[in-house]
Length: 247
Image (cartoon, rainbow, N blue to C red; front, side):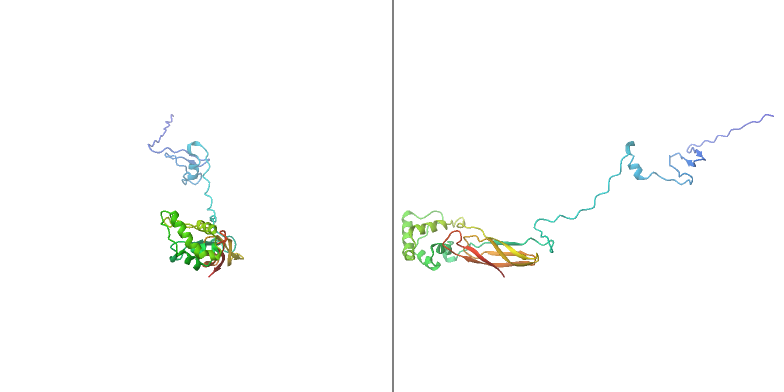
């Protein structure tokens, strides 16, 4: 007897399956990996895809560092009041003159000569001021000098001293230039870092013809203050600040 063996070949156009019983692994036509033993599809993790671009083993990007604490800006104090502005004293202005003096620092000139302000104003009434664009003529200068000394000589003022003081405090009214001066400076006195108790004058300045505007800032707030001015014969201290009082 002859036995005809028939071989059945099953061909599909879309699927070729290979089943390995021992490993339980199946591949489909679209190369999706099926889980071993449980036939559930598991796609490659994105991390593995990102780590194997171009056939290279690349490490994933490190996690971003946590934000750091902001660096304190300049002018911030340490201690019990973080964030509080540094203690400061701002001195501005202080170069005004009496309207009757037409911009001239009579208060400084009189003090440097050692006479009362009223006396120098009386002496200056006999003076013919020069224009703003030019100085007096030689003849005008002599006449003005004679008028001043007529009143000032009885107080011991010499011609040389009058010239010295007049030249030092000379100014240009047209350009709004002031006379020679030195800016004063001061610092706030703070106790235990939290309470402002006063002001220390670090440079008394000179040349102040009126009270300057003073603003004091400390841990417990901002305040205005008043200056006490000193007038002397010495150019370096004439019109200086001798004291500052917080209101």
